[in-house]
Length: 144
Image (cartoon, rainbow, N blue to C red):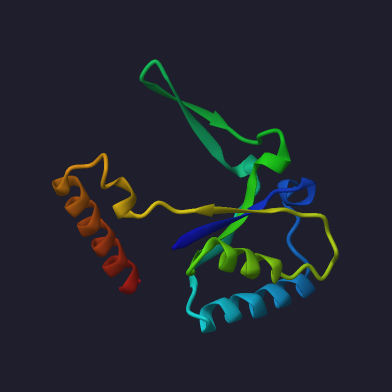
């Protein structure tokens, strides 16, 4: 089961402050634990929303809105993508996320859909095409 762990933004991350050296060191150790356990698929921090954009779709037309965006608590500052056996295991990994500076924070845990989750609504051809695309992406990522 894949889970995305979404690190919520806060005023400091939205202002573009970089993490402390202490936090970077602790996060490096934590990420190393994820890698050694064989559960980490991806993970990164994100620039503040002031450097981003949103594309809204209205009446069939895309409309681009440049950041920054309000409600920092609703924005994402970083993420991990992990592959574990259960939501409970994902929760246990999140409980171990370092917070050496004692800052307030929140991490949202969301399960990622798998191809088989769509079996009731997709044709076998659509499911096969999805699996081919996933395999192609995995192969491309191996050559980077």
